[in-house]
Length: 229
Image (cartoon, rainbow, N blue to C red):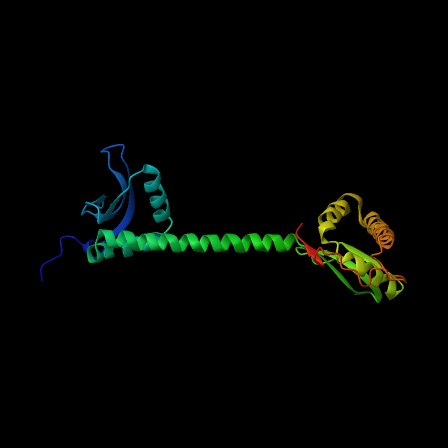
């Protein structure tokens, strides 16, 4: 058996593809392509004519396609091998479908991220029991604990506040900012004072009822219990 004069021949990597941008500066051609990298016997990497090429009317469009192609190296060899099978035009259509799917996926991810960010900033109000005492609490979604707890000895007083505060989500953003500046005690006093003022106005307008819960049957008309900060 003859001795192999090229001992590294069996270790030569297979040919691969890479995107190419044609910006028209050298020959006036604007577009994108895929070129096959080849390794010569001396180890130098060169290229051969494009395996696929797509002309574009504008440099900006070519750069957009090229920028997208660069982010998908796992697809370069797939595209390069498909080109002689399906033809340049069909491959261009297939790649455009991939770009559209990526755009839809990116848009969905952005929407989900925005929704998650909104939920993290959302302030909710709840009525319950904290440490055995009837309370109304204000809580922001990205925090484990409520930033305000208004506690009462009498459950009726909690229900009195709840009857009113659940219709005040349009005020939550202001209250959160006020709490950040003035603290819990000041915010608690502010909320209770606003409730009393609204009760007085509602009674004067005939919108409240008698007893310890004047807003028991009141419907504030603003939605209940939450708002975005």
